[in-house]
Amino acid sequence: MQKNILIIGAGLSGLLAAYRLKNKGFNIKVVEARNRIGGRIHTKATEDRTPVEMGATWFWDENTHLKLLLKELGIENFTQNMQGTAFFEAFSALPPQEVQIPKQPQSYRIAGGTSNLLRKLVSNLTADELLLNQAVKRLDFSDEKITAETTDSTYEADIIIITVPPALFVENIVVNPSLEENLLNVGKDTHTWMKDSVKVAVSYEKPFWKSKDFSGTVFSNVGPITELYDHSNAENTKFALCGFVNGGLAQFTKAERKEKVQTQLRKIFGEGGADFISYEETLWMDEPFTNLPSSRYIQAHQNNGHSVFQKPFFDGRLFIAGTETSPEFGGYMEGAIRAVERVVGQVINEPC
Image 1 (tube, rainbow, N blue to C red):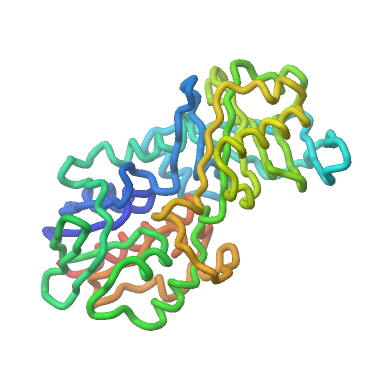
Image 2: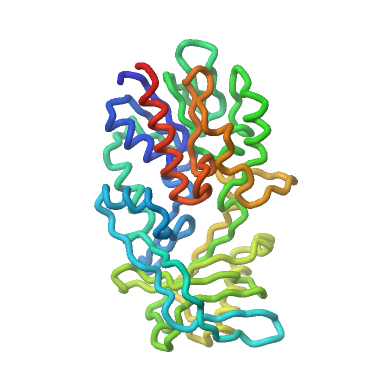
């Protein structure tokens, strides 16, 4: 198990791959283009220290691999609050309607924030094994040792595991010799989860909606908010609402978006809705390590789990993981975990 493995990307897939393979005795190194770990898992703390999720948030009972991982790491989860009246805005000319949400599969959140999962996975990595601000520009498989070039460093490895979205891999990283044409074409047309999303969260001193028997849930055809949910913490000591706004708002400034969100919250909930402490947002379409400028339309989940991602390349020296590569639950945390389990199994079965 003395092979050196370079993992590109420190999101859930990359950190789980590092956790598994280091425990198997491999020498691992993780390089991440951002200045933080997590990728599309991003728990922010508001001004009043309320944890709010700007990326991956919910999971369900059928996400069995994620549930097992949380149990393995000793991480608690709690039920997403959906109790009480919800609001639905059908038309701008009509007031919000109070509705009862039909019974649906229960959803859950990770106690302490989704980033708590990342902190557990990264806890056994040294400073030499996790390197931030290292965007990989080129991979060379022409020699016995693979070389990976970043903006300011060069690394050698026996095996490369790609965990960034396939579209970013094939568009941003030059590979020598060239990748197979099928992989290039499919990768370019693979949908990247969250790339079109604008997520917002507002925190409050008190959960005014609960005292009025509101669930905090909003669905709107009007916008700017399209979906909104109770985002109080597991201990019920910090209070927030969190959800998505229409992607068209990306053309406005943050201050303008905040004002539009505040106006809508006042319309739905009254002055209590507008009286928030903190406003947080993330425009994933503006994140260069999530989204690429492109005029091509790609459907949600298009090519997620494609067969081309399931095999290794360059004689078992290049493996592709990441949530978009999973045939099941592609684009979700569950898919990220399943993709890593597949790749780890492939790597372990390789002769060392």
